[in-house]
Amino acid sequence: MSKITYKSCQINKACNLRKLSFKIGYSHTHFERMSRPEHKAPPEIFYNEEEARKYTSNSRIMDIQVQMCERAVELLALPDDENCMILDIGCGSGLSGQVLTEQGHIWIGIDIAKAMLDVAVERECDGDLMLGDMGQGMPFKSGTFDGAVSISALQWLCNADKTSHRPQKRLYTFFSSLFSSLTRSARAVFQFYPENGEQIELITSQAMKAGFFGGLVVDYPNSAKAKKYFLVLMTGGSVELPQAMGTDAAENSRIAYSKKREIAKQARGKPLKKSREWILAKKERRRRQGKETREDTKYTGRRRPCKF
Figure 1 (cartoon, rainbow, N blue to C red):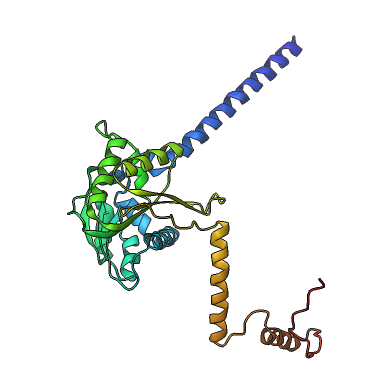
Figure 2 (cartoon, rainbow, N blue to C red):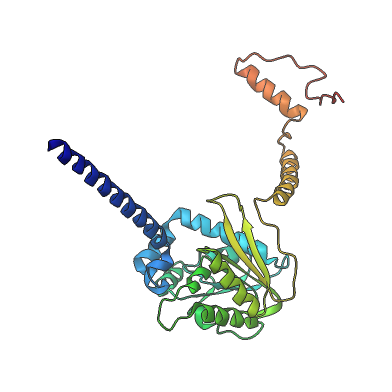
């Protein structure tokens, strides 16, 4: 009898463990979904006073925002030495606007979260600020802006926060009004976090329907953490998309750029790496440290000829 009781206890224990593992698995999936801000609350509620200040005081978030905006401005391909009029969509506390100011551009920012705009006013941002919902369209005259940037805002339009919200309709309203507010040679660059492929398809299809040309540029596509999605839209006809960072072609261009940097370093008085001067300086440093070092000869720093 005791053996039967022991066996039944073991079976019950195994069943309970299975149930527990199932619950843990479900909770993890649920947590992953809920970890996205747009699934927690509408933007005007999620970014309250506390969240707005936390967002602006976090140095890591600030650095990432600045880097992404710098990349977005690079993708805009604005004319050199020209002060352009830029629209910052989902401007928040003005972190991306600060990048635009530093690059000499004039900008107007629009955001739905009043608390974020209040922080931007406290930070004395140079741009003009406007409270508005991008899903209701851009309230500007035709041809007002030379370009538009948006950092981490576009994915919010894919959510229906109210029963009256239809993401497809709101996206089309936004893109069509943005298209008319841009000049005919302008670009709009959106950095965003798509939840899945369906969201990307929804966003791009509505942008093309509104009259835009362009497509998706994915920087560092093989990295889970560094991967960034940029939607590059153009008003003036189909043009080849910019090269994504972290790809083979981009690496080749970076090699050429790094050579220029080495030459620039040499011009500032620093010897070029692997040059004769660099090797002699390194050997001298080793001698001062008391390390065994070979004597200098006329062959020091020379490149050895290939065998074949």
